[in-house]
Image (cartoon, rainbow, N blue to C red; front, side, top):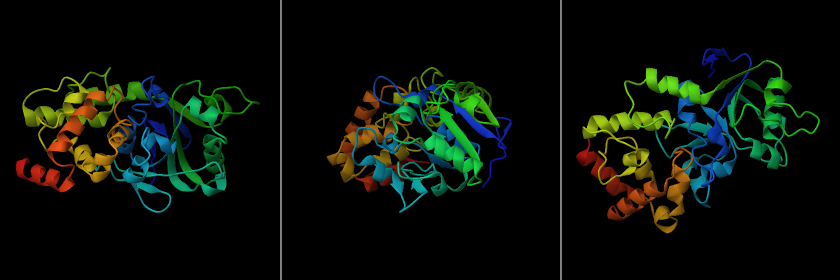
Length: 287
């Protein structure tokens, strides 16, 4: 499936989107994938990024949120956040990369620390016709390839490239494509969370004031989409490895998730960490 245009830009060229969230934060990387729901709305379905981004701080989460035996693996933790994940190791070469389109998330730290540059392999694969369309999400407009001979921004080192910023695109989408918004744009630019906040206000007949409200499952109506996270986390694995909660939530939420973790953990105990109990509750109390 091809993507012809992204933010008015033809996909005949490589498209670079800058999002500072991909750099993480001083509280541990949070929200680096906040823009992914926006990109999936545009038809981009295949992604690659460091595998620890799907399991930061947990040894079990990466294998739990993905299904499949080989590329692309399918992210199945949340039904509304559905995408294919491509895993490329240091031994992978550009010739191993083939897809109608691919979007890479990375940042300057990842580029400098890596033993080999996945970004360079992707660009080579694109130039060799292995990829029809290539999208890159980086943390800064000054992002540089790890190449000692070319200390220039990425956008100055490759031909046929176009760029735009996620913060402006997301702000416009939230203000104009959604009927309203309740969460502060300073707190989150994840459009999935803004859509969840609209569901919250509709079902609860009161407005959420912060992202954590959407995860206070002792209060939240079971039809609000954040319950999908809760249902996924209802498992013996979570009971044994509570870091699985943070690792599952962290890629999507920019704010400190300490309160969210406590909301989820406390409520999971009431359901005995059993997904079937959660499903039965949602079925009995949903609309």
